[in-house]
Every structure is written in structure tokens, then in C-alpha cells.
Image (tube, rainbow over all chains, first blue to last red; front, side, top):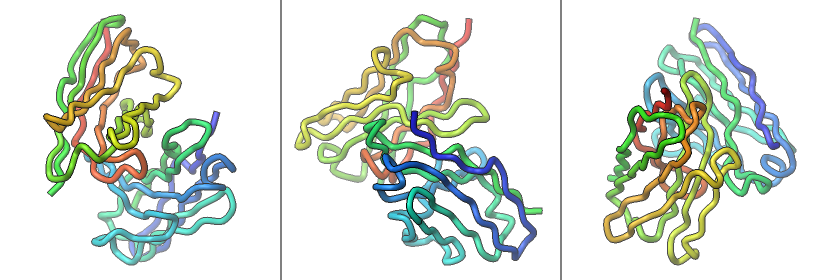
Length: 110
Length: 118
């Protein structure tokens, strides 16, 4: 069964840089675009990064995405209190014939 | 402005059925796929089903966890997608989100809570 693995939690102080990793396989990240979703407490997820490294309009430049092989990463530079949220990587999975979400990472601003 | 609004959630007993609705507006519903994603309490996101638009055959896909129990459908005349949930299990307890598209999932509703408990 396909899985996109993320660390359960990451934390940093305001202004620091935080990086979230996402590890998959050839049936998902290795052959498909990666998306990152941000879910603020009590709200629905929203697209933060699309097609590996592209920010939708309105997303601050301090959010950036990257992909290499079967892994991807989301970096948050200049961490702010409003960045406290759950972050999910996601990609289409050929084995699932549907989208596969990562296990999720909770970011805490200390 | 795209709007997606889920309804139909509530408390239901194991083995019973429930139908969720997803009313959409602000875009050409009939040419877009629609999807359902759920999130169990305190857990992550799980994609469960999608239905393609009629121009793409209107075909459906399901996650293994719900295949054979859940059925997704759509009424393009009303811009509504449905999720018929049969043989409910306690592990189906979750917030159910409707979202536009098959992939990526761009616009999401606020979700509707389904609780399966005796």
C-alpha cells in the first residue's frame, strides 16, 4: 500500500526556517507532481504549493517547495505565528488511481 | 467565486446508511470532476472517491477502504455531487470534505461531520 511519509511534527521560533520532508515512491512522487496543503485549525485544507514548486496567487514567498526523485520538501522561511498549522504533501498515485495524502506534519511556532 | 457546501452529516448507527450532498456554484460544474476526502478525528486526510465529468466518461474511483460500500454520483442539472454511504462502520467516523476536481483538489467545502456509533 502506497504511503507518503512525513515527520509528525516540526517546530521553530519566529523568523526561523523550517523544512518538512515527504517521502514516497515511483508510483506517486517519483512520477507525478507534488502538492502541499496547509490546514489551519478548524478549517479545510488549502493548496499552498502546486506542481512541486509553484505558489498559487496569494501565498507568501516564504513558502517554497522542491522535489527530487521520490522525495519532496516544503520550506517555510521567516516563520510566523500564523504558520501554525498542519501541512500535508500529496500526489496522484497510480496504484491507488487517486490522490494520496502524506501523513501530515504539525508545525508549532515556539 | 467558487463555493462548495457539504450537508447530510450526522449520527448514525453501524450498519446503517447516510447520504452526503455537495452543492457547488461559481463554476461550470458539469465539466469538472468532484471528489470526497475525509478526516477522522485527530487524524490525517484520506481521499475516498472521485467522479469524473460526463465529457470524461463520468467514471468513478474509490479508495479500498470504502469500495463496495460507498457510491459517488452527480446531478449536473443541480450542480450537486452525492456520496451514498452504506454499511457504515465506526471507523467511517470523520469530517467529510467535498472538493472540486479529480487532481489537484483546489476548492474545498467546510466539511460535514459523520459519526458512526451505537
